[in-house]
Length: 557
Image (tube, rainbow, N blue to C red; front, side, top):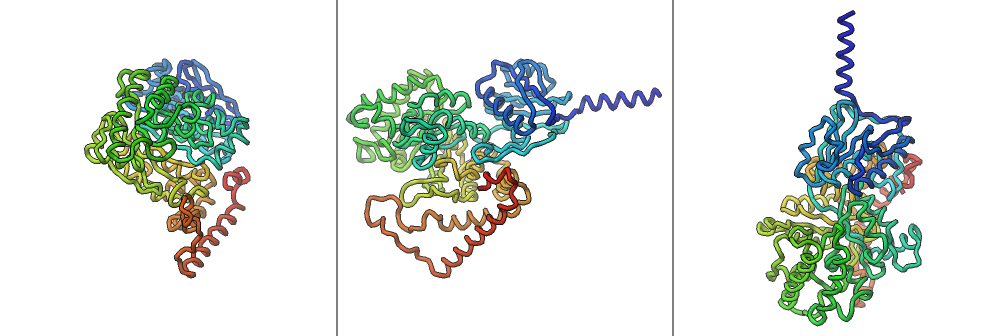
């Protein structure tokens, strides 16, 4: 009897010390989180509560003191002091998180900073089966009766690249009219407002991204001129940056005609241009921004007032000095602590190569050739810079000699090869992807941002396994087996020649000769083989469609 009692006690103690974390469909839960946590943490909690209700059909709520899940940021949350977990591995890291099952069966979600805590919460959403594309691609979460993490479960994650995000571009035919006319109807022409941006930022948060370059074509009302956009960026912890022709987070294409006076010319009208920049910096100084330095023309053209490379170099030297002065005056006296970028894109690369000196703490953002091949990798001297190096990369492009905007044709294998090369050669500070309208580049976006988050993991498994895992998550393992070779064939055919290039001439050029449609220089046999290959793909995806679960049919479409 005594021996049996001791055995029961031992079993009871063992179970207490090694309890697993579990969730059930009939079980309301509480998340313990201090009220003083930053807005991005509060936003992530709201998303998880929505996800939990969707998966388990049960309620979830936040409590400031106790809960099944303990959420906190190192150095800020008093809740972390009360748990028997070692969070020292988070100290000194940026945007890192720890998920760990505690001895009492509760789950700890701890972050090194507010971004890390938010990403940790979103990791739990992933674990219970919620796709980052839950809203954008109608990936309805699968209902579950239960979910378990074993007693020994622990994951510690931190980003490979500090600033990771997307650039909305060429939004004229997709995002802007859909937003302003359908999702967020507005009488304001070109309106992309906070409701739309909240959905974009939710996607970024779920993909562990933190950087956004807003849509900037003339047809769109600029981001900072649209009420509510700044507020929603803060709620989702998004750093707002801008492209190569938009210095000081000013959309010159959309804003100069509204706020500027005279010509956008720093040679002959510098006072007006300076005020244009100054007004914006004063307005957004307290917000999380990444300030692009330098100057190009109003929209993707070379600067006015200076013709030769030497003249442009002299203007840019003055521009950099004046812009840094504005940041020092209004944002932080120690200008070296402010995130800044310089982008040697198109003709600006020639000016940089002519000897332009960019301050050491400014991140140099290198570019691809618009078709996926990076034009410059950092030298040893550039790799040693305090500001580090970044990349601006395209999986969608509108311009000469040919655009590709209709389909998700960009090769994930090329993307991986080039971004691995970029990282290995020191481009590790900032990665921004030109995604067009987001759709239909969902997979390329996730691959890019997964590499930016954990490049070693993606390199280890390779693109094929990563793509298969993505297809399994969205459509199930059986469909993924058949879809994988079909997608690989699609990317291969598109790499040989993108469907958008069928005209075999330039899409956008003032010279009339480029508007004449010419035949491709291919043999009848090559054309016939290509048509047969696409017919096979069409048959495969139509056949698989009948096996897709009803709640994933919209996602599959």
